[in-house]
Each structure stands twice: as structure tokens, then as C-alpha cells.
Length: 204
Image 1: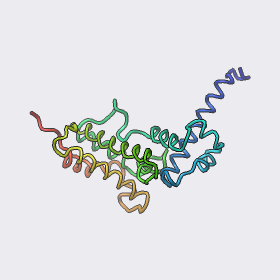
Image 2: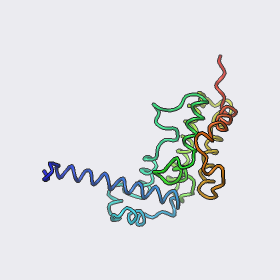
Image 3: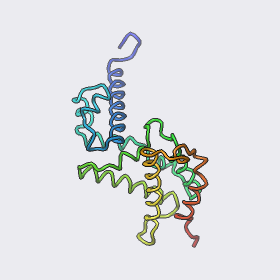
Image 4: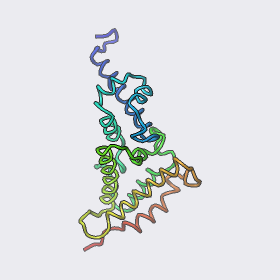
């Protein structure tokens, strides 16, 4: 035990968790700004103030670090047990997701880490799957399902593309009034879009 009653093993565990979190934050920042190919483990280690060996100890490889950073990113519409249900709730959730300065802990919208080509097929598979999952979340939230009939998944992916476009414009151009639009500013136009693309399923 230490002088303050904390065990050495407990302190090491907290230090390990803090180090892992610092590495994830540093990696996420670089993956968003530079993409997978432009990010090096050495630079991530330097940003987090640790050695390269620690990254390999915690994550094994650059792909392992990307996978962990991706897993640590919040789901597009939140947790499954807190997902919006119906077009109006979906529009409200999207307005919060896409509002200006809505991701202060990440600096920029986390979807940006999925956009740049990686040069690694396994990583590209993860990128595509994450974007497909976002479309499926939107589809489920709207009350529709991917039955293979109709174009509901395509419509959901158009909403994903809208969100990606907002993130890209904010990151690269910063046009107003979109740049600083609040959730309240976005709610009405997003509600119109959601109802147009994914109206409530017809009642039998």
C-alpha cells in the first residue's frame, strides 16, 4: 500500500488506463487530420509522450491502434438502448450530431477519420463497414428495415452522406451559416429532409 492507502497495483492500473487513453486521443487526432496512411506510430507516441514500444504493447500494430480508436468513437446515433425512434426523434438526434462545435472532445467530427484512403485493405474494410453501420442505424431509427425491397437503405445512406458533407465543409472551407449552425438552427431543415427521405412506414 502507498502512504495514502492506494495499492501499487491500483496506481499502475490507473496509469496504464491513462496512457492508453492518451494514445487513443493522439491517434484519433492524427487519423482525422492526416488519414491512416499519413499517421505514423512514432508520431502518435510522441504526441502522447510515450515510447513506441508502449503502442505496440497496448495495440500490437498500427491497424490495431486504428481499430481501437474507431471502437472508442461514439456510435453515430448513440448507444442502441438510447437510439432515436421515428423521423422526428431521428431529426433531433442528427441536429445534435451535426451542430457546430458538437464534438469538443475530438476537435472535429469523428467521421472524418473514415474518409481518407488508407492503403491497407483490412483498414478500408473497417472504414466501409463503419459507414454502412451508420446507414443501418439511420434506417432502424426511421422505423424501416433492409429487406432488399425498395430503396430505404439508399435513402439512409444519403443522410449519412449529408452528415459526412457537413463535417467535410466545416473542416475544409468553413462556410457560413453552416459552420456555426446550432442544433436548433438545423432541426427544421433536417426534419424536412428526414421526412422526405425516410417517412414513417405505411401502416398495414
